Length: 209
Image 1 (cartoon, rainbow, N blue to C red):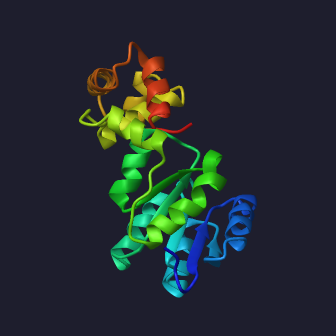
Image 2 (cartoon, one colour; image 1 turned 180 degrees about the vertical axis):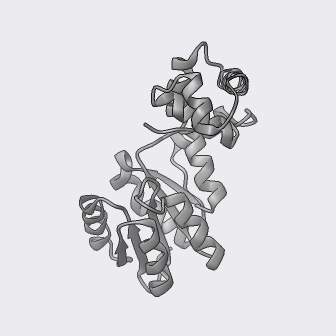
């Protein structure tokens, strides 16, 4: 099934080379056209407002306003927006965050060329698009407890090399409270120690380095 009018696509990524690569793929599709580009989350919202594209591709990691915040802002104003997330992360927590924010597709930058056009067409038809490895990752952790916002903050600081005392000072908590959060984090992630918890946290996309 093809569109009579080309599918208008907005590309939001802070790397110009990434935008150029995606634009080049779109340019050779007879049923698509590049509506515009944005380099950060704030620009993404402004461009979406101005262009109202059929599909928006939004990078998760962007300066100032990140992709998740941009998606939430766009969906709040345009509930019908069709949005695909672009990311280098395959972690289930990151994917879940994007879905909750309102994304209907999740694309790994490593597999873009193959899946990009399929995802754009699926979104334009009102469908969702999740690559098999992301769907499998989500299914694997389905029903597992997610980290709370506070636990995520604690784990992020530990990943930066902070000891319990520093974490406590940074978050205005007692050391005992930090230890309690750590126990909970290790329990939820099935980790043997702090380092293991950080590794799992990064893999699953709860935190980033």
